[in-house]
Image (cartoon, rainbow, N blue to C red):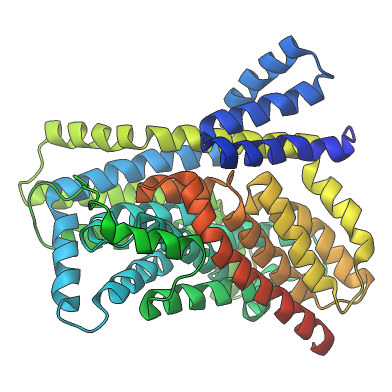
Length: 472
């Protein structure tokens, strides 16, 4: 790999700075990608232009990327079918009936949205899309800022995903840990969970903010201005109302079948040991993106058969509504292509490797977890990907923990928590982009309102790692 040094930081930082300045995310990401390939091509504008176009196409060379984009379209179709069936209205009415008249009604709506995101732990994008789309009408009706919904959707998804091993995240991390013969992937991941301070603190903070009604920073300003503005209208709940089960059952089918598909995809009858050993081997060797895609199709087809059985759906309406839902997700799919492309660019430039190389000399055993958390955060912020950060930092952190005698579980937790923290703060992260689009708020407004909250829990996590590093 060519060593681009400091130049490897220029494209992501340029994209982040432009996005904040102009609020034009597509333009900012595209220009950042072009500048990156201009650097790689030695300043040749023509070759840089061609390489940029090729980079967009190359996104689909990764089966994982392609599956993620396809499942985004399938989720769009599923949500549209649920809406068409009246399931969203039914669910909203069900929630309102159980919460109306009770103390702190608005707080309980917010806590319910966060709980929904927490329970859909199969994949962060699915969780964000579901929470943002379904709860937007409730937030609009009761004059709760959409920026708050984007924060709750964003900050309840990845933290829950990274704390549960039975999903695509767990499979991915265990797959990275398999490379180290002296490390048991499942045990290491499980033992690291109590030390994932950022994820735990963020989830606790999300529910506290929801129920207490407290706000600060940019979120407080938006919340104070909202009652003076006209309530935003949304057509999401237009149409009929039916049983909440028309929403709950398809989503439950998607969530519950995902671990089964993960186990099925990695199952190997020749593996010795008991059933538990075979299951955990299957999870660590299964394809997370395949399992999530199959689970999405299961939820989608469950909805189709349910509504057809109820005589709500014909073949024509099924096709028409499915394509309508997919078309609603086209902007999001384009943003995901751009996010994946800049992630690939950062990998080609060696952005993460450069950051980790520059900062690795700081590490001593007691402060190693805290510094690894900070380094992982910066890499995820600059590259916009937590999973890319995991790949870089686990390959560095595991050998480093043995070399300097740092606690392995603390180090793994610091990598995972730091990756999620940096991803939450980054304007070029795919999950940050999806949260703003799904919630119907301005992307940069989402970044500005979420950042103080993420920095608060991130700062607490650093303190926890410093203290724990000297104790464990």
